[in-house]
Amino acid sequence: MGSPSFSLCVYCGSRPGVDTAFAKAALTVGQWIGERGGRLVYGGGRNGLMGLVADATLAAGGTVLGIIPQALVEREWAHTACTELVVVNTMHERKQRMADAADAFVALPGGIGTFEEFFEAWTWRQLGYHDKPVGLLNVAGYYDSLSAFLAQTVASGFMNDWQMDLIRVGCDPYHLLPALVQDAGLSPAARTELM
Ligand code: AMP
Image (cartoon, rainbow, N blue to C red; front, side, top):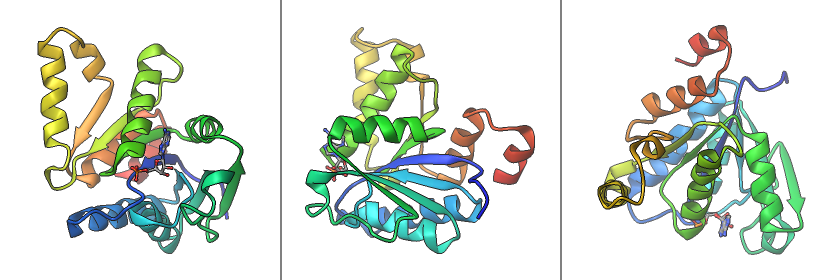
């Protein structure tokens, strides 16, 4: 297998959520990555949307790098089918290695773990620790209230428009994912293939 055309870090729930649209979106994202010869970088679990996105990536011919702390190997059911499963000592190491391995980040619906990872990728970009695109996939309106709240933080004077401009929010994976990968600065040839 050749080297992946891009690496997309996906943050998402370790649970499936109650709306079947969430699982459908996770499968779509995995399939999109796999069909384009990409690599999924994620938390390495088998549960919930995390497991679905990994399975869909592999089924579509992509590669999967899972990075999981030792303490979570049993709790999150480490996904042994990953192309590469890296077991690290701490959560900090997990996040750093995921960030280093990715060309871009996208968050799907999830819980506090997903929120933490998304906000960290965003704040790290704001601080200049990286300059990789960060996206939020708003599946079935799941992030509507978060989007409204973020707009309120700007209106309240705690954020600027340029900070909001550091993330892309979209509800259609077929628009959001190519935009993120293109923003990551791949070569023009690779960009065309991704569309
Ligand atoms: P959740 O969205 O809560 O279902 O969690 C999704 C993923 O985020 C899981 O792999 C969790 O291990 C991970 N996670 C939970 N807490 C944190 C944290 N503080 N930093 C980074 N990832 C976390």
